Amino acid sequence: MKPLIEDHQLEKVVRLLAKSHEAKDSKLQSFIEAWAALEIFTDALYKRRYEREWRGKLETGTPPSARPYLDHQAEIMKGRIRLNDKFLIIASILNESAAKEDAVTFAELKKLRDTFHSGEIVERNLPVQTVQSLLGKYLRLHVDTDERTGRNTRY
Image (tube, rainbow, N blue to C red; front, side, top):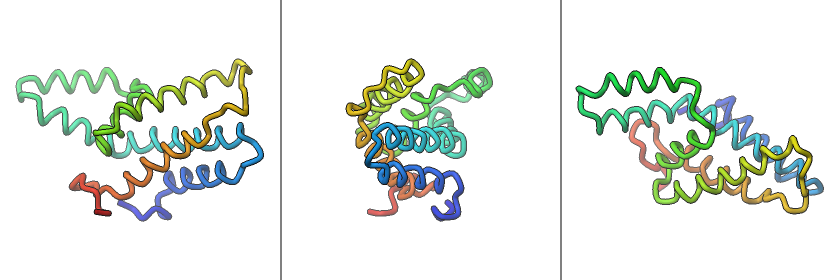
């Protein structure tokens, strides 16, 4: 894996996350920056790493005779995986014990973010720290996990 400062996508994620912590006067700005960082993290890393890892896990449990089905399914779903599902896959690989609960949190945050276009935003109730914490958790897990072995390198 590239060092964090050499990884353009992760550098962008870290920059947005830092800006979200700095924008203490505007919960809306903090939420939008933290959410953008979480969305970039999820989408970019799913495509670059976790889609392949997930596919490998599926293939491991699939009899060789059924592999054409997986290939067909992958072709049909190419570019159609929902952001919530991408996050669930990443969470399942990096932190299986908390993946389901964290995916529910992610879905709730995304649902809130999706309401922004309606103008029904109550800035004081935005869960900025929830987005920041969720991203921080998975950013640390991603950075601390060896891509080849899937093992946490910190412990």
